[in-house]
Image (cartoon, rainbow, N blue to C red; front, side, top):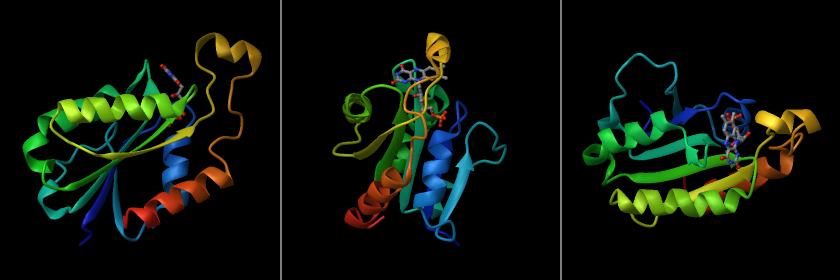
Length: 151
Ligand SMILES: Cc1cc2nc3c(=O)[nH]c(=O)nc-3n(C[C@H](O)[C@H](O)[C@H](O)COP(=O)(O)O)c2cc1C
């Protein structure tokens, strides 16, 4: 039985899930794609939960945010981390996610942020931004983050 879970949504170019799968040890973590999973996620068994998604319209995916809000009482005493990928200024969005979590009563949550290939809207016309991101260096940085935080 795993005591660590990753709850994610990643659909634009699968940037976020590729990064997660390359950096986290899949034997230690239960992965839940919140866009697909039908089962109830039994949060009680987990000590560490990583929420992850791309940034869509300046926020993490709405379904992730709703899940956090609906399960606040169950996650408030666990070790929570976030991983995000974004087309523009990922660090800005990391700060935004932190502020959002703080508002929910989740203080000092570490958020790992990374550029992700983005062809949304007019960006498609110029071939997108952040081609080939996340890349090996991004995976390396996330692995460092995992080690530093004893994830
Ligand atoms: C509908 C949509 C809205 C987006 N909005 C933003 C945004 O507000 N800011 C930003 O930096 N990137 C934005 N992006 C780019 C994504 O955050 C980026 O491509 C991310 O890596 C996608 O992750 P995914 O491939 O795991 O879904 C948007 C992408 C889509 C498809």
